[in-house]
Every structure is written in C-alpha cells, then in structure tokens.
Length: 304
Image (cartoon, rainbow, N blue to C red; front, side, top):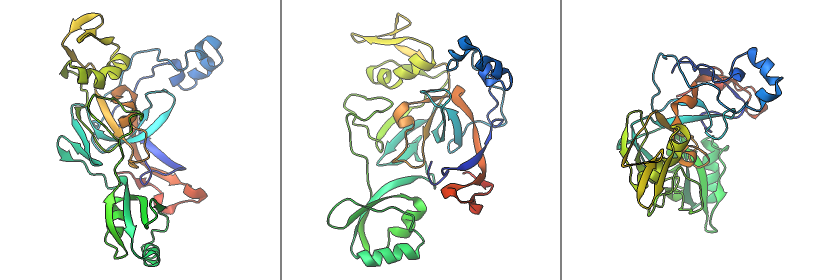
C-alpha cells in the first residue's frame, strides 16, 4: 500500500462501518482470553475458529475503492491492509496493467506502477528531477544505453513523462512466469500480474456452470471457505461425492489489491477474500513516525 500507507503509520480502523463481527473464539474476547492463554489445551486451538461467523448490520456496505483491514487467508492472526478493487458479483479484468471492473476502468490515484524510459541527457534529467522535488524516487538502470526504470504514482508520471530529457516513456508490463503463484492457473491462459481475467467475483446465490476453467478458478475457494468438497475426475464434477454440473455460492467474496501494484502479494496471488475475514475500513492515519520522524502532513490524514 506504499504511497497510501507507510511504515510506522498509526491508523484508525472503523469496525462499525460494515458491522462488527461477533467473537469466533474465546481468544477474541478481551480479558476472558487471558485465562485461555494459560490453558495448554486451549492454546493448541489458538489458530482455530470455535464458533460460526456472525456480523451485526453496519452503517454501510463494502465498496470498490475502500481501503480495508482483514485477516489473511493463510493465518488468521496475520492482519493485512489492501484496497478493494471488486466486490461480490463484479466482473474483473486486468489488461496491460489497467484494472477493469464491469468493463469500466477502475482508477486509483495512489496506485503505483513500474515505468521505463530512455534518458537522452542524464545531467539535464537529474536537474529536472531535483527541481520537481522527486529526489525520493529510486531510478534503476535496466540497459546500458541509458534506459531507466522506476515505480511511480500517477502524479509522478504526469510530472516526468513529458520532460525533454527523456523519450520512449512507457509502462513496464510483468512478463509471463510459469512458476509464479496465482489464484489459479488456467490452460492456455498465460496470466501475469498485469494481465488476467475476466472472471466473476463469487457472490452469495451466484450459480456457476462447472466446466474445467471454472473448477480451476474457484476450487480452492469452494473447498476452503464454502466447507464443500469439490472434485474433478474424468471430465465429471463432484460436490460432496455427488455428480453435478453447477455450483451455487454460499458467501460473498472480494478482490483485494495493493496500491503498489508491482510489489504486492494480494488477491492476484492468494485468491478471493471471504466477507468473514474483513475487520473494518481504514478511516484515517492518526499520526506517523515514518522515517523515524513525526510527519505533520500525515496527522489525521484521511485515506481515499
């Protein structure tokens, strides 16, 4: 979430926005959890959920663009912060690094991408960067003939792309890497961080046809969070041991991405986020000691 949130930011999380969750184990209950920490048998179940998920009604619903705090999919006590780029029922696609939600471009001003360009006059370029107060940006050499790369926000792009000292300014797209982990690997689809989809975000009540692609795309989600055993064998699909051709989702899910698109482990990697994992919305930065210095410009800074 670099450029939106920084290390040593202290954030305020609104747990009432989407409705507070009821405790799912004694370890979630303040003061009562102390006794359970001293019980050896209870400690063995620390990572488990003891009770089913329930949430009170909130004052608002989860919306595209919200910056959200949630329990990770791989460890319940590991908390992450990402931006919601698609809600349950949306159709998501990423083309050439651009996110499309229901066929419309989903723009986030704080999102950062990697760009590359050729420097014609190095000294002129360095002076221009200093004059624009962009000395914090790390530029790396990618070729011997004066090509540089950098991870830039949209605001930084607008300041740099038209400098007379550079040419061939373009976004640097993620190459296809067969061994890279993704939410799913579909046959004949060479997905990358910058090119994937389209696919539908699972929604409660949504019925899908069980073909091989849908099976690969949703199998992990269904098995882990829907508490259903789904299998594929010799061209047939089995749900809890019975042959079927469709599946209807029981829960709502969301697609999360970091604003630093090139350096984020998010839904592109670990998949769809179930609603039950969501803790709340980031309301603002209370204060920040970023770079070991109190940042007055981040005091009570709202998060868009």
